[in-house]
Image (tube, rainbow, N blue to C red; front, side, top):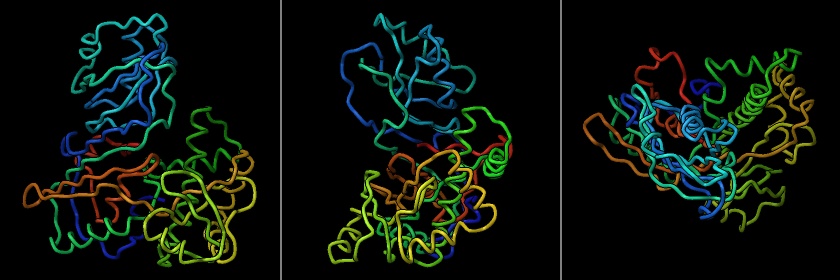
Length: 360
């Protein structure tokens, strides 16, 4: 389900703008999930890159170190058309690293990279080993009423936003869902593509459930039979009777309503909540996605329906230039924040011929 098809939680969009006029307009800094051990055979490098994606840097690191790409680790994927900072690990059993100057000079064309920090660690950096991402986004050619934009930004800061899977999860033109259906129908795909398509199928079903909750005005409110997710973790509890204690925890963003990440097994939700979830994914295409995910032996899991951007702040850099600053947890999309503001196009997107990956 593409961003343009998703409903808005706070009503009519309040602006139109473009972003990524330059890579500096989209800055992402990875938040470390742990401290380096200080010893071991893996060199942890914090690298600032421009005009390079994560795979580009991993390949350069492998060539620089004289090892296979399997010896390179990173926690998350970062976009090419941005300035991003993230960690990589390089397996160097002899603890001898080539000169960093050779690595920094290896980037070609517009792409550049710079090593910001280096530490030794005792194991390879695994996927997902980050605390989140900090974003600084610059929107240009902003059109809209200043008062309406300010009011919408305050709503986002105070209430949070629906925790959509961004259009990046669904591929160019949303084609990953169609490919997932073809895979479930018997089409053979490569192993790495299979994982991507399974994720797209799950994300599609989740977004359909979240769409129903947004349309019903209860994406950040309880339903009978609700399953709650603890903020900052994947731990869930419930259903349980609504209480003043739950109301206080919901208001303080300690817990969030949750929706299904589909797989085999029974839904954990019950009553009105379960009925809404099942109805949202009862069309023919959704039934095929559900069956495919169950046959792939994925287990039923949950994802928070509500997302709160942390340290959310903004300022006008010029009459039509708005800067946004916020941090998001792993797996959340900056485009979900932009969606609640309005239509934000990407400068030069048609020329690039691709949708850009969000940081996660």
